[in-house]
Image (cartoon, rainbow, N blue to C red; front, top):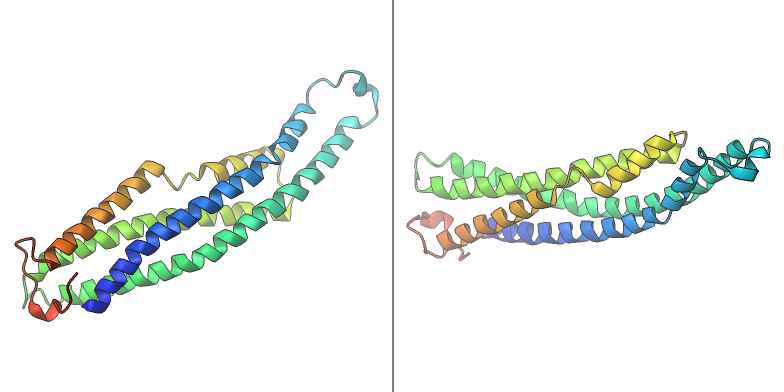
Length: 218
C-alpha cells in the first residue's frame, strides 16, 4: 500500500497547489478586465444626453461603433491570456483526477476484501471520505473552467450584445461555481480525513489494519 499512500500525499499537496495557482491567475485576470470596464461605462453613457454634441449626425452610432471595437480589441486579448493560463493549469487538474481515480480503484479493491478482512471497513470509510471531498473540490473548478471557456469563445466570435458582455464579465469575476466558504470547508475536511488516516497507520486509534495492507508507515 506504500504506493497508494504516496499518491494520497501527492494528491493532497497537488490540490493546495492547484487552488493557489488558480487564485493567482484569477486575480490577474480580474485586473485585466477592470482595465476595460471604463469603455463599457462610456458605451452605456451614450444613451444619455450629449449636450451640444447631439447635433452631429450619427454621433451616437459612430461613437458606439468605435467604442465597441476598442472594447473587444482590449477585452478579447486580455481574456485569451487568462484562458491560456487556465488551460495550462487544467493539465494539472487532469493529473489530480487520475490520482483520485487510482485511489478510488484501490478503495474498490479493498471493498472486495471486506468479507475476509472486516477490519478494512473503517479504512475504506476514510478513503471514501477523502475521494468525495477531492471530487467536490475538483468539480467546482471544472465547472468554472467550462464557464470561462464558453464566455471567451462567445466574445471571441463577436456579435454579443453589450448587456451580455457586461453579464459575462460579472460572471467571470464572481466565479459562481467556486464558493469560498464551501471550498474552505472542503479543504479543512480533507485535512481532517488525512489526519485520521495517519492516526490509523500510526496505531493511534483502535482500528487495526491487516499486516498485508500495512507495509508502510503513514
